[in-house]
Every structure is written in structure tokens, then in C-alpha cells.
Image 1 (cartoon, helix red, strand yellow):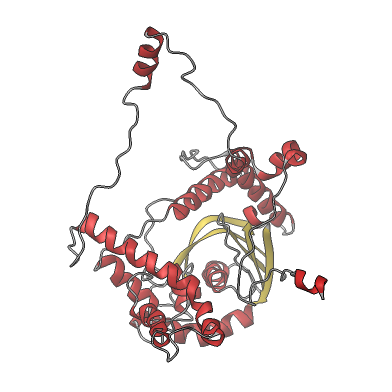
Image 2: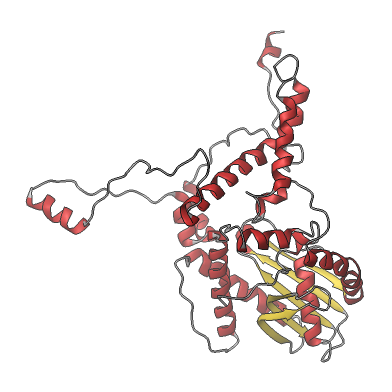
Amino acid sequence: MTNKKHALLSASSAHKWLEHPPISRLEQIAVEDMGVDDSNVYAEEGTAAHELAEFKLKKSLGIENNRPASVYHSDEMEAYTDDYVSFIHEQMSELESPLVLIEQRVDFSTYVPEGFGTADCILASGATLKVVDFKYGKTYVPVEDNPQMKLYALGAFSIFEAIYDIETIHLSIYQPRIGNIATWVIDLDALLEWANGDLKEKAELAYQGEGELNPGEWLKHTKIRAVSKDRANHHLELKKHELKEAHLLSDEEIEAILPQLDDLVRWAEDVKAYAYQQATDHNKEWSGFKLVEGRTTRKYMDVDLVEQRANEEDIKDIHEVKLKALTKLEKQIGNKKFNEIFGDLIMRSAGKIQLVPDSDGRPAIVRHDVKEDFK
């Protein structure tokens, strides 16, 4: 499933282009014309997990295929992909002799110009259609009213509408690393009403690169995060706080600035990363800046020869052994097994206190004012 062609208006990016229609064309320009790096190590890990899950699911259904190899494979990934296969079989058991499609290309171009995508697993039987999406990332993805899932459903329906009288569609997200296994049900009529209305309208705007793009934190997850003028202008508005009469920010001014600071820092890092990538990969020369060699590091050229020479010189204690870091060991054997074996030997320190917006879901800390004890 590697080297797939991707649609401009892909299902996986629908949450962006439905809310901010110009984004897909802008990302296309950033990658094709401006040389923005499109690689993503997390996406590569996700691809490896998907390929392994596909192999195992096909094997469980008696379909011959070759086991993929990847540097990202781990005991944790093996366990989670096994669980995914079990989940699919559970879904199958709820249907009578279902037809099963795995890593199926689906076409929803009736509603989205040149729209297509790949659904991880589709099950169909009688009046029921099921679409399952396997997600290996750790960023929570809600299933309810999820546009990516609804686009997959439209494509899946077009495959089976001549075979079954579909009435109900079950959309499931299987996101095992954070325990997000959820299903949302939608009637076919409701799905088609959305498709022929809001979806078609927004998709046409997105395809033309038209419509409004409102700046905000969502831009940090896009390919234009470093080169977006909207994001730059959003943060440059902070300049209005520079020359207040008293030269010191008031509490009210700080409260106005605080919500922007996290993304401001990320934006600055994104711009720096883009400038560096352009200079190193495309020989771009930035006025006032140059490339220099950083601090050098030393390492052994040949470990075997170093060991041999140390033995010849009778140098002792040249090796050191230490326990793997907790997170590395946990990833190696999987979260469940790790907790079963080592759970009682792990202690959790108090987390560092953070200042976050009220919208953060964590409960506020109740601070004790020592001064009150002396009143």
C-alpha cells in the first residue's frame, strides 16, 4: 500500500478543507512550488502499522500476501495490530455472511471533485454498511460526525448500492494506543443530505482554492504552517502591545497575549525550520544569515578495533550496561504487558505545574495560600 497517489481533496484532510476551503490548494503550492518538506516520521510509522494490520487481516481471512518489513515494527505494534484484527472479526460476527473489502479505494467524486481515498476495512451485509478506520497516532480523533469517515462511507455506498439496500451505516475508529475504539451510526438519508448540500458546496470552493481561511492554532498542523501570511499576521498583531504609555504590560494586556503564546513559539520554530530546510536542501541564501558548521562530536570509527586495542593495552572496564528507559521498554513489549510485569515497580512523580487556558480539560489545581495561616 505504499506509493499511493493522494487526492487534492483527500478524505483524511477533509476536516481542514471543509472549514477552511483554500487550504488544500495552498498546501499544494507550498509543496510543489516552494519546496516545503512533506515528510513526517509519524506518518511513516502509521503507514508501517497499516501495512502490518492489512497483512494480518488478510492472512486471517485466508488471503495470501507477503508480510511487510519496517524499522518501525515493535512488540507494541504487533499487539495492537492483532487487536485490530480481532475487532474486525467481531464486527463481521454481527453481520450475516458479510462482504469484506480491505484497503479498498473508494471514489466520492460525485460530491468532491476528483475525490477518492482508501478505506481500511469495509463490511456490507443486508441493510448495513460498516466502515472501519485504523489510526495508529496518539492524537484523539472523534468518530461522531467525522468528515473523513463520512467520505469513506459515501465511497463504500457507491460500491454496494447495486448489491444491497443499504439503510444504516456504522462508522468505527480503532485507535488502540490511546484506547479510542468508538462507533457512530448514521442513516443513509442523513449522509446523502449532507453530501448533496454542505459537502458539495465546500468541496467546490476548496477545489478552486476559494473561500475564507481563518487563522488559528489549526494552521500548526498544515504544510503551510511556516509560510502562511494569515498565521504571521495573526501573531504580528501582538506588536500593538509594544509601546504602551507605561512601558510595562498590565494584567489585562498579559491576559490578552497569553492565549497566543504557545502557537507563537511554535510558529517561530516552524519558520526557522523552513528557512533552514530551504538553505540546506535548495541552496537558498537568506539576507543576513549564513550556514556554518556546528559543534563537532567524536565517535568510534570501528568499535571492534577499539575493543581489540584496549585488550592489547590491558585497559579494563571499557563497557557499561544500563537499564533501558521506561518508555523504550514499554514500547518494546507493549503497554499492557509492561503494566502486568512492572506496574508495581513504577512510581509516578508529580507533574510540573503548567499554566493553560480554561478550555483545557484537566481540573484546576487548588493552591494553598500559606499567608492565610498567619492571619
